[in-house]
Length: 444
Image (cartoon, rainbow, N blue to C red; front, side, top):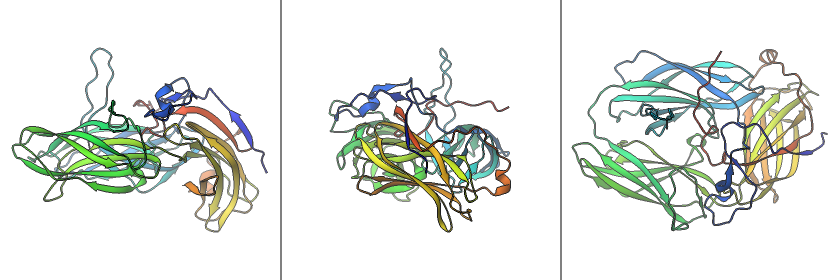
């Protein structure tokens, strides 16, 4: 059985993420230790990119068809992958002085694929897709953005392509996202996706401006779709507001009340206006994010450094963990990583008493198989608190046959016991995306 070794690494290679000091945050700080972010140390997420999009010629219908390529630029197998399609306004123009582009374009629709896939190291895979935008959108110029993500909503690389929807005259309201306001912080307001800490079951408000540019008065119902962290994790709740009227060619400010949930975690809300009579979408989407304070932990990512399928072989697995998103609450967990198939567990290992704070922690090591693997191969990571209560479970499939695995050799792997690397404070648990800035990568 491998020994457990604790690693401390204060300088880990970074890719576009914040990290911070280990100073103790005040409980009344809306961002905990995240407010003391230091970009000198940060977490390197899986380097999986969408490298191009090829669209079929535009037809007269709203339907968008095409192909795109996804590339795994890692030395490990990356599983549990999905793709997401966002429908956005065209990319804003660059600042004439700096040349930078601030992509704050409005979002109109979001679609997440349901079929998971895995990629071998340096593997490229092409996908065909058909996307049907909402039929209630005004015609004109838009942009689709295809993003590599996973079932936890952790975004990786993406690519954009311009599309044009057929012109149709339709009533529509433009939503202009406003701040989140909480009575817990009476002298502050927060940008919509800043992710401030909210106490369980406390009330707060999401503020927004509805701009009706049509020639018709519109009666609409504001609706909030609530998710844990991202739409990829599935809908938690739907909160219906009171119907309101927005006069033609006028703006109206809406303050949407929300009561925070009991369960500590990151919450993500999409606010939209729907026709009060027909229920059809009459606006773009407005996004909000907040954190309910308290003890929580989860598996951030899991990578297969080396696969194994036969008795006596060792699979090498890397697991990245995060503690409570409020960057205040400390959590101690027990981690179990198991290789399973249709017959049950073929090998597993435990790492006891992992203390999680406001950072990302990484553990890597071998799991020796007690027997040959059969169908439905999967790796499962389970977190339990010190009372033995399961607080998170995450799995990725080993969906490769022996012939495919022969094409991949990974030499020079450091095979040590499962240990913990403390990477420092990061904002990745709260942030929607792995990458802070949008970058396109030249593919050779």
